[in-house]
Image (cartoon, rainbow over all chains, first blue to last red; front, side):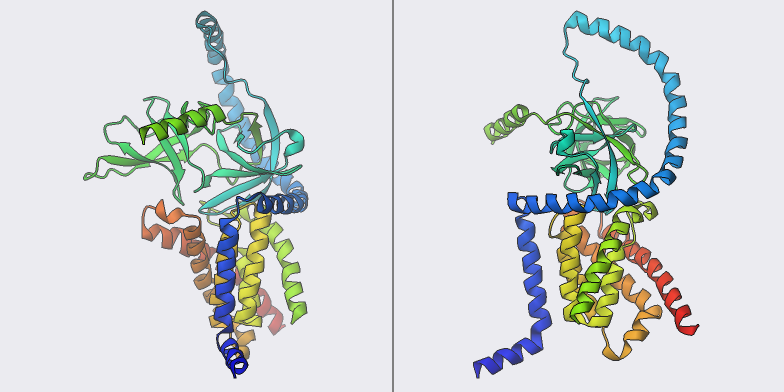
Length: 279
Length: 163
């Protein structure tokens, strides 16, 4: 009798039973996605798949190169105009640094890589690049191109790595307005980059350059991120949300550089201790 | 039936390659058509709700693994999309659903639901400026974009049927 009931129950509700089981499994797997076993499976899977996609990327490379070359010529012309000015400032800077004996923090090694997989999404943008453990890439390293900050490495296989782009909700980091020296936290809201809860008294103007902050534990300071493109001017509140247009075109970007910069564990620990002390 | 599952998974692999390499070039403002969803909708309309739900789970799992995204997000979304598409399944109208404007309508509806759930899973609802942005920018537009690609398929199949 019970068996008959169970069979009838299954036949009537099997779609719902299967749906609930699969959704619960998805949530269960999702909650364990940071466990080493799941990470290993993921690393092996995207590493193997990226071998296939890298062939397709090679086929499309000539088309990408045409656009890239045109853009690079324009940038080259602009850079040429800046070079002389910067050269003079560089000499002056070196002399001044010697005088105050400052350590130069801008000299990080760069690892060249190409994007072989692009996961375009309104909330979880990520790329896979063709540089991995063999090229000494490590999780946590920042990634840039000639325009500015692209993202951060989150997972590394032998020859490939997963790069979380700025258009990903999971990535939040400290930035600075280069002109007014205001610091804030930037994140992706699903359609644009925003710096949230900026006091209205803070000096922010359209077109201001936004760079990574000295306070950032993820990125070295002064990497270009974007320019202030707008913001809400809520008359009732005391905070504004500032929107930022990234320098990097996440569709057109093909060649990137991984910066050999490892986030400072010491700095992280000090910040955590400070937070604990405040609490 | 079993061979249908195998063929679906085999078709998934080249489509995933195209989705992750060529489709981003067609995207605008992070909005891109979803070829995996189109495949899932077609198979669900052919095989039914239960099969669609199972296939959605498998497609989602593989996509999460291959794309380097958060494991579980596409799995959850595609499972639900397969289940929802199952409500449009009709054994007697399979050909009609697949080779007419119905397919485009179904893909708009499911694509919108799929994109909204994916955004919600990606925690963007807490950061999104408004519900309108979530429904329109992150839901409806990707759904419409996917349906435009499916239109090409409908045209292709209709011509094939009449010639």
